[in-house]
Each structure stands twice: as C-alpha cells, then as structure tokens.
Image 1 (tube, rainbow, N blue to C red):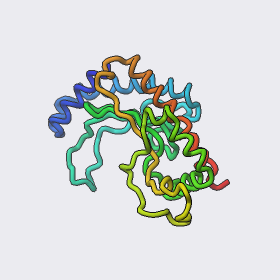
Image 2: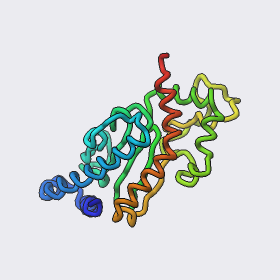
Image 3: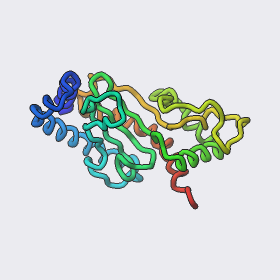
Image 4: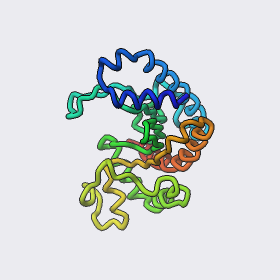
Length: 224
C-alpha cells in the first residue's frame, strides 16, 4: 500500500511541476487515499496508547502536499513527502504529539512540540525549570536514548539562558531550545511490511508519550 505512495513521491521529486502533477492527478489521488488508510490505522493505535489525542480523523492530521512558496527561495510547488501529526486538535495542535513522515530515503518518526508560540515555549521552559529531574529522567532513559539519542537541535538554540530564567540554573542547556522535538529515521525496507511498520511506530511512540505528557501538562496549566 505505502510502496505505491513512496513510488509516487519519488517520481514527484524528479518532476516537481504543476504540469506533471496535473497530468498525474489520478496517481496522486490514489496515493493520498492509500496514505489516509494507513494513517487511519495508526490513529486507532495511537488512541489506545494516548487517549489525550481525542478522536481525530485522518484528514485532521495529514499535512497538505502543496507548499507555501510565498516566502521561500525554493519555488517547487509540492512537497516530496506526506506527513501526519497526531495530537489533540490534529495537525494544527498547540500540544505535543506524534508525527509520521513518509519520504523516500528520509522516512522518520518524530514527536514533541515544534516551534511553539512564545507563551507555550515559556510554559515548557518553566516546567523544565520547576521539574528538571523529571525532564532528565524522561530523556535519559535507556529506551528513549535507544530510539532518539537526544533532543533535536534543528529548531535552533539560544546562546544563553532565555529571558526571565537564571543563567546559573544547573540544567540551563535544556532551556535554550526553540523547539522540543525528537526524531528517528526509518529504513525504506520497513515500508514494505505494514504490520512491522505499525509495530515500529507504536514502539517509538510509546517512548514519546512521557515527553508529550510533560509538555502538555505545562500547556494545560497555563493561566491556572
């Protein structure tokens, strides 16, 4: 099922034009439907793992394939991947969640919270400041490190302690992140076996749950 989606995405990457896309719209629609079917199965499993995501449908979680090129030097009109984010409120959620990214040669599982708004970012940093040992326990567990190694840094890091936080805080390095995400690459070979892929997704997402719970606790307490 997903092998056809991967084939479509690989071909799209080599022919990323509106003319090609329009000529192959039927293939796109078939690939989109196959991806939605897999995402629906994944949602059902994530709901068992973490009921806090609610009851989103696949369409609520899947990102559009059309790129916003208004402020980008790269003017190719389409993404060469399909992705879905599972969290309370779907792909536009302010909460930490679980992400599945399908892309030839770059498929990955990820999660956490990406580039949160300033008030949410401050709430997360405050939670880490208030409960540093809880946070360290999550990200230094053997299973967590086995899957993710460490927090991603591609969201950028501050050079010093953020405003309103002391520079001499022993765990100040954890307050410098602009995003709080982790990710794990998935080999293309796994995509051909749906049962094995679903199992890998859930094994990885299970290790993400405590991290998301930590972030979402901070978000839920905002304003209380």
